[in-house]
Image (cartoon, rainbow, N blue to C red; front, side, top):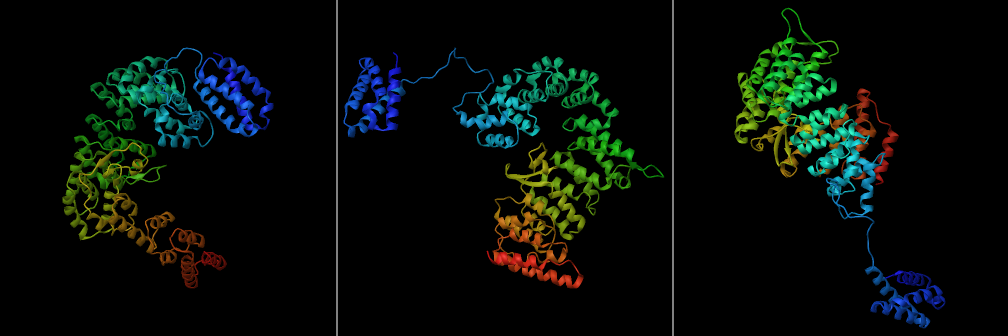
Length: 615
């Protein structure tokens, strides 16, 4: 049935509704459309009703036309709506495997995201990140996934990294899409595809990786080789590649082999570290005993070279320090018997190692104090392990020295009940908390923090990595901290950063004590920054009178600009800030008269006072 006459009637009725019914009797186009519809009126009762309505409308009096027009137009609209259809030429075929799923998302909803994924210029990363946080399911849409894969080649590296993270979260279903159109000789985009496939499939990716390996080049080759390290069956292949590859590609082989185990692999690494001790760094995430033994041997060998020879001082060179830093990464968290013996040897050699001088190009070296810090970091990375017993052993040898006090305390927090740990160690601090013991407390508790996510106290050798969600070895304390520790911690100066990590946000009692601690530091005129004042205001602090007096007295370089900014961060009213500035200006004038310190421009001070008084 040809419904074009019905559509023509609808169009003319809509035009009449816009133009008004005054000219309806002279609308020959509507009359012509009504005539064309007449053959259809017998085909269906509804078409007959439309035809009758049109006849009545065209013959009606002027005052009756408006209501009749709306009635007929409503009926025509309803009929046309029932006749609508969608479609396209060709057969219906399923979406390609891994290409995503259909989601009822309009073009206007997806357009900003697709533009950010496929476009150029600034602002795109925030658009993608915000969408990922608020609507993660959108990235599984069949229109978005291909754009996400293409984004792996984005010239903005951080954006490509974000795309890679999002793809990994989609699961193994996206692997076919990543393999489709893969170019083994491609550039960074293809290398990122390999990284995502390896992360999603692990050892199951081996057949495909072996298939594409012969055709790979540069970055893609390195990514494929590194991915082969996930499968123990690839150890022979990787050992062969270690003999033929060079440069950055061989480094990928070494990283892959560092994930392997077995007699042949151990023999390879023994020979490799003997030739290049710095390569032991590749074993930093290998927790086998032989990897720990190799790291210990390389560590001791380098330190023995740095020890002063008889009758002369030894200098550590820039290259030697770089190698030593590589070894530090490898020993972190290792706790084999050989590693424990190495630390015992280090302890026995600390006096001699303290005398090692810095060579040309070395800015600073202090092995005597630095190596115990390395042991503390290693203890944090290892968590409950034989290193805990070693640290206790080293402390027991000389409890009068604070050298290993933080090690013993942290080891106890990791392995023993909280109350028992507190009761054993507190008397040691109560006798006297001098500079060294205060530093020991900072060193121990500086590695501990309250994790809101985990809901418990944890320890880490690198708190910064924890904050940015970078890979970091984290260990839980044996039990939550004994609250009595805070009575001691709040008495130690300049540890507000540590206290902020330790005090749970949901603990109002400790939060109040922390606020008082922070204010006391400012009141005493110690070092603080604008954000410290802001934080106090946000915590509800109201006792601001005279809080900058000591700071201004001690710091002759304080300017009116700096003081104004600090006062503006408080909860003081305008007149109250004006009075504080008057009092501070008197202090500056008095000190200027006594010691000739720089005074503040009086005109600027009075202008600021007037501005605050007017608020």
